[in-house]
Image (cartoon, rainbow, N blue to C red; front, top):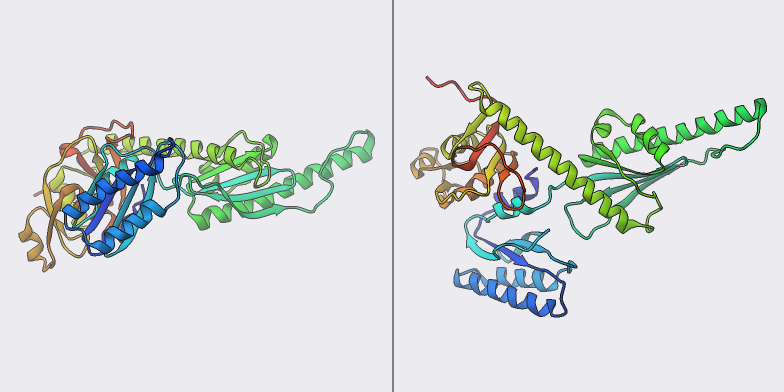
Amino acid sequence: MDLEFIREVSRAAGPYATVYLDVSHETEDAEHALRLRWQELRSALEAQDADLSTLAALEDAVLGGPRVVGRAGRVLVAGSGEVLLDRVLPEPPDPPSASWASVPDLLPMLLDLPEPMTAVVVRVDKNGGEILLADPSDPGTDPEAVEDVTSARHPLHKVRGGGWKHLKMQHTVENTWRSNVSELAERVDRHVSEAGARLVVLAGETQSRKLLLDNLGERAARHAVEIEHSGAPSGAGDEELAAAVDRAARDASSRERHAVLEHVAQVAGRPDGAFAQGIGPVVAALRAEQVDTLLLDGGIERDGTAWIAENPTHVALDREELEAMGSRSLHRVPVDAALLRAAAGSGASFQPLGGGRTGLVGRPVEDGVAALLRWPPSPSR
């Protein structure tokens, strides 16, 4: 999981309020229940001396924000009177919580949050097609049309008949169709590159989907999946399309996560592998900005703490290490929060090994903490 979306929260100075709230809206008294649940969490923050401006910002966001139909959770991070992060979770948190601390409590969110994944969606037919962008990790939003690539070339339909003229017409129709889809493929490749998309969803006419897939560039084709959908224009069947894109995104995320776990199993057993495990070695690798992917098992309780400084990658288990580096504004925080802050601050990604609702069971690692490294560790002397 790309941690770019929490980088600013990790970089800015705290303290932070982190709220995990049940925002389910499936009964007649849902609004009243939401107010009661929020008031309970607000009281918990007041008891922890959260400032009034931050509490007011959270209350405005919780009670004035959009509603999600059905069961859902929500995580909000706020500080200095401003909501800095607001995400919907697919299920209510278990349990709900509210904390006021030097760093936000983000691991529960990362275990349950759908993988942030921009998708390029294409409705294709023999005329060309429509290109849409979707964010399946943002519930309640439909794919948004960004370009209509419809050709004015003619003819587009084969006619009945026989003889040389008929055959020539058939070839003309075939060539027009292929040209239209080829032009669409070029535009799709461009949108995939510009959006950094890791999923390309092809909907519409079966033959045109397959022709489009054959014409896509290597990157777009690698991330492409086909779905059975009518390919109707925007506004027609958008909910059906959004649901299909959501399923495709979940499948793609699951494949990516299992691929990472397989890679971990391969490198963990090699003495020369670019891999570290255990809190101490991983903290050292984060401080050296050596971590490519931080791996945490959310099913293991880690009660330890770590020291952090203003620079997110200045993290250590002993205060003296940071003082020797000249670091200032030191804080002692839960070790999971320190690990995630350093990972986000150094451009590392995150992968759960298990826990939460991930359904993942990764290779057991020391302390439930490991990392895939950007380069192998130096040989010990």
